[in-house]
Image (cartoon, rainbow, N blue to C red):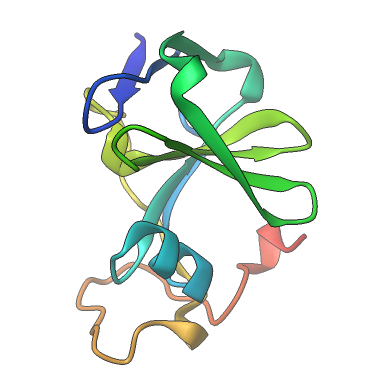
Length: 135
């Protein structure tokens, strides 16, 4: 089963041939600002299973921290993926066009969440990185 996604204007699209390792909601200030929302929902993938199907030439990259680039469509501004060391390893779940087959499992960086947002679901919450994923 392939999972597909695209930007708002449809100029850039991609396909994932595998499954997500995990999906989670990040409340850090960088994700909030880059998505213009209370949090960003990211899906971690195996980079070998990701492929641009159209519009790679419309991607704009922004180095958000050393070795990490946030990629968005320069036509419509949609945030699409995060690259680590030059390979796509995270996908913005909000850009999916098909069901990923899994759901978010956690909230991370809730220690810096928006003061005006209340988390109301029962997913586990972590002040920063969950213990098993700390860099």
